[in-house]
Figure 1 (cartoon, helix red, strand yellow):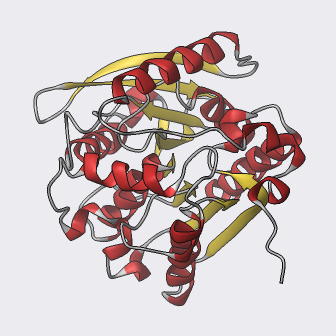
Figure 2: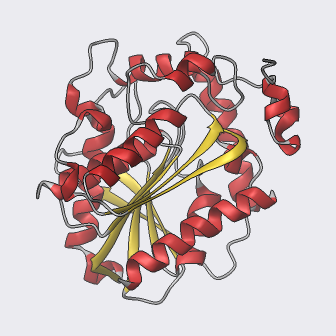
Length: 311
């Protein structure tokens, strides 16, 4: 049997990226951060936000540090709200990283999106990012009247490593350790540090590959063994989680853990929708946000949130 090459499997719109790599080795991490931040800052400056109002708040956390939150308002005061965690393998990114995605969520779901600039590893290993995310979810619920959002219609969402944080917020909520959330949206989620067939297969994929996955988990743990509560897929008791949407790319080392988590949620009786986007690589919606397939993905996300909030 002839195995198709990665270049053949990638959608033609993405084939120019076939040799692109994300290198998270310590020696180049600062340079990779600077390059990504510059590109995403430029994209954020030129992004159209028609119908969406944007503001920023500085939030003091119980731990005594500050987290900046960018609020995207796509609906009237009193709208539902999404607490959003950006992508970046736990080590990259800031509020500009998923700026376009937040605009699209706010606009298509007619809601507010609260995106946070959580602390990054390896300078701040686990649980710093999760603590920041939990503090912002608490802040959103406690200050809902001041923020003009509906505390009874809060969702969590994230992309890549940000989806890991969102998944853990939903798990904490399900255990009664965080404010109630009505929905979780996990895009190309980081969920499991254990081997999978897709990690073994996709060792040289654009956007993200297996080597980058390995560095990601090492950085997140601060070069120490990660405790089970740092890894969303190692959690039990999934039956208490809210309705869920999971979207992922076919040609992504993270694909199988997304599918596995969706199956576990369904087996636990959680209403779950799963989309595997064929011919795409990790981060395609950031690499080509104006592509037709990215627009379809944004429609899936916005529609799922609208239905969740309508319930």
